Image (cartoon, rainbow, N blue to C red; front, side, top):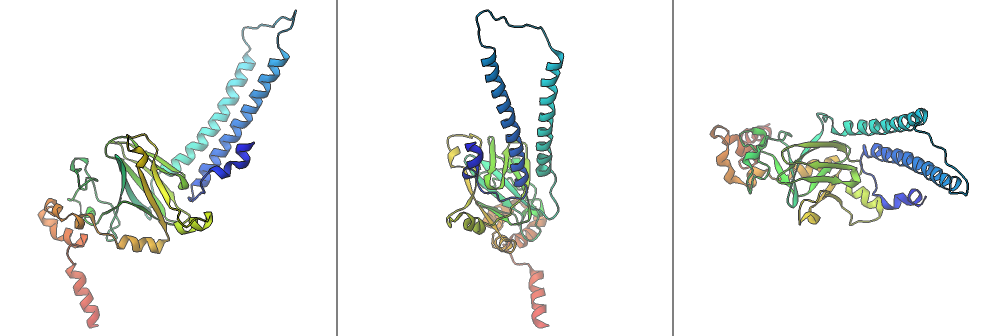
Length: 298
């Protein structure tokens, strides 16, 4: 009774679209288990009292009862099947392919930090990676032979747009980690050598959540929920949810990873180096300059 009445005092406010279904699955499961627990407890105590030891009484014995066995097999099987398929439907929805309009973000877990990789605004598509290219600087293993990687940028904060589908592509660099965004009801393991993904839609900006809970210092947070080593406790990442327009401004203000690490330009194929410099912002696009001059003349 206490858990039911005061449960909301111990849960975090909901800030995602699919979270409504996740919470409903939780409450359905809770209802079924509470009913089953109550019936079993009542029957157990009644039987203990009714069939307690009495002088001269003799217990009845029968080797089997098919009807009883069928009953306690079929009913739990039906209930469990309903719970499993309800949860499976929610799982399939959040792990299914994302729409073309989705904001695709890659999350890399390593001892003991999270790093996010975003596609640049010029192509809005993440470049390819190769784990063999991972080193102390190129932590994502960016494949610089792919043009889409030239304007990719990394962030030590996770920035999300409100009311747009978000696809998190999750990887682990060393050991097992787990992406946990409690306000968004997101939890997905980061497994070395096995990319995973999770899609969701944030419904409240950071500012809106601050106003809702009355705490202007509040920030969403991503934590690791796998015990991944001694520094596991410190593996946190600040999450910021923006309005759509503010999110695009934030993306446009970020520097490409290649521009921040110009030494890696030599790893770009010679035929693509000029394109890499233009796309990463290391060099101005001459075509854009000519177009701008034409506009001024007009």
